[in-house]
Amino acid sequence: MAELKLLYKHIDVPGIETIAQYEANGGYSGLKKAVTLDRQAVIDEVKTSGLRGRGGAGFPTWIKWNGIPKDTSKTHYVICNADEGEPGTFKDRELMLRLPHMLVEGMAIAGYSTLATKGYVYIRGEFVESAMAVRKAIDEAYAKGYLGKNILGKGFDFDLYVHMGAGSYECGEESALMSSLMGERGQPRLKAPHGPLPVISGVWNSPTLINNVETYACVPHIVENGGEWYAKMGTERSKGTKLFSVSGHVAKPGNYEIEMGTPLMELLELAGGISGGNLKACIPGGCSVPIVPADRCASVNLDYEAAAAAGTMVGSGGCMFFNDRTDIVLLMRRTSEFYAHESCGKCTPCREGTRWIFKILDRICSGGGLQGDIELLLNICDQIDGRSYCGLGDAAAWPIRAAIKNYREEFEYWIEHKKSPVGPNCVPPVPHAVNPMLTLTPA
Ligand SMILES: Cc1cc2nc3c(=O)[nH]c(=O)nc-3n(C[C@H](O)[C@H](O)[C@H](O)COP(=O)(O)O)c2cc1C
Ligand code: SF4
Image (cartoon, rainbow, N blue to C red; front, side):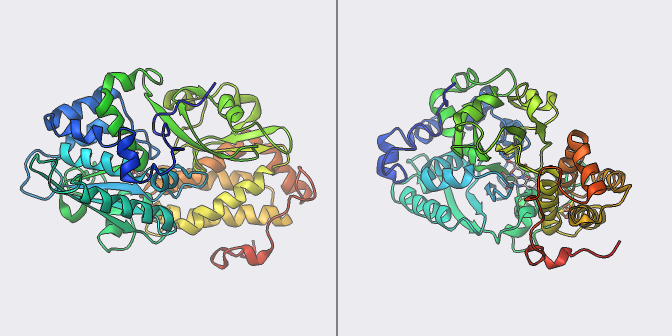
């Protein structure tokens, strides 16, 4: 199985990040075509394509676009979620760095179809190089008349800005992102059905469209070639291609663009196979999604439905492979430390629960595990999942639950023998590497 390069077709062309080279390879034809169409016709092409959001949830893109009100008594906004905080995922930063005009073009098309006049690319603070590349692309697009006033002479105005975040996982959650963009604390807001949808009342209480970098990058191709063309790729309900960031114990880590529905093991093959041992497990969609043991990897296909049927998720496409020298309990200890650190503290189940999970796992990995700790961990997961204010809480519980379900004997071994079942090298990091906020309190 080869890669199916749609977004990445020209990624290796020298200078493709410049507007001249991007245009020479067909760039901005999607926008040129879009502005000759009725706005609704563009949304209809996106609908026909079957494109689903690439930020993690796989929500049908056209439904959001279509939900933006048609009246323009308020300014409409288009936002790109370029926070990319999910551990294991590094596709958006590469897209922005190497193909920044594809994002600019996709957002301009989104602006045209949703009657937006302003757009923001909200970029994680650490992605300085990507932000510089996008800024440069925006300047070039203004100079060529693809942004600004009266775009392509069609009476469409659209301004695009880069806004840098400060490096917070929670600010990738769309309502927290909007708060952060408006200069407020990066915490989530009430969502539908308890609060308004962003498409009705988002930033500055105005209609707001939020999509992921990769989602916008697909749009120029869909408009240029038609929704039906795009829908021929992928599976019945998961259309097109998807970027997967492959990392962990593989020979050739990196970003790979594959057709939706590609078997997980073929992605492993593309990445040069497992290194340093035999395959033990895979986390296919970023650290929030359930882990898959090696013996089940062969039954996982990388589309939304097949992954769910196999008990995991495509998520953001951060695909991590682990060899048999990996200690799953230590892996979960590290994962839980991340969530405890990133919890914004707004709601009790997540604020307290994520810290408890980390402290218990740290206790186990420090040789102080107690009988009953596994049940305690599962109980805390139940208290967090579905009871938290936003998705971060759920995301903190899912990996722990799945690890206990699939590798319970490793947790039991740690508790009973006070050491790793994998080998003497599997030890937790030295204490100074642990976040002082999370230090172990005596049991
Ligand atoms: C804790 C948390 C972090 C998130 N981080 C990101 C992120 O970094 N990038 C992203 O595109 N979506 C992220 N999301 C999903 C967004 O809330 C939202 O669904 C997405 O930006 C919508 O774009 P899409 O429909 O194109 O996928 C996150 C969600 C949660 C709950
Ligand atoms: S689940 Fe609650 S504490 Fe956790 S990040 Fe969301 S709002 Fe903040």
